[in-house]
Amino acid sequence: MASPMPRAGLNRVVVAAAAADIADEIGWPDITLAAVATRFGVRQPSLYKHVAGLAELRRDVCVLSGRELHAELTHAAVGRSGADALHAMADAYRTYAKKHPGRYAASVIAPTPGDAEHEQVAGDILATVEAVLDAYDLAGDDEIHAIRGLRALMHGFVSLEQAGGFAMPQDLDESYRRLVDGFSSSWPRR
Image (cartoon, rainbow, N blue to C red):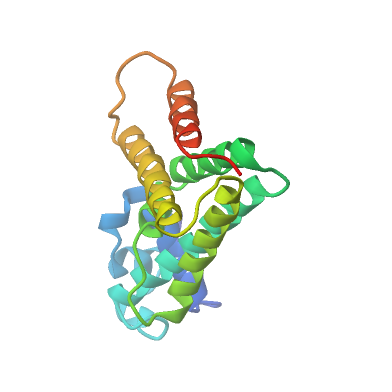
């Protein structure tokens, strides 16, 4: 664990970033205000100047993580199209989950209705996925089903991988590539 940081410069954004780091280190379910306070070398009540409580802190980590994931997905897909864009985005998704397991767990939590900032972040991710899937002939319900299916296959794979659920010796990268290929081939192209 990193040594405590100085108290100067604490604000809501800094506190959320520290909580995200802690989530990556110890796991999203185990985040506490006490752990964050310890990271900064302050007493837990000092954090209430910056966040209303654990629920708000968790929400802030969800927003931060969603923004990071969106940036990774967008960067991977820019300049690509069709199956190439789909594979690049899916790989970026998996890489983010591996690199930031706590943040990743926070990123998949749906926004509370009425939380405009969190809803915007979720909408941005959705817009990137929709843009990647634009090469496929999807409209209306088919588009929603495709987005849900893609999310489920990426999340399912990375969750099983994180949990050590793939003990067979075959190459996981190849398995993931084939999974994304299968998804890609299941929808007609424009």
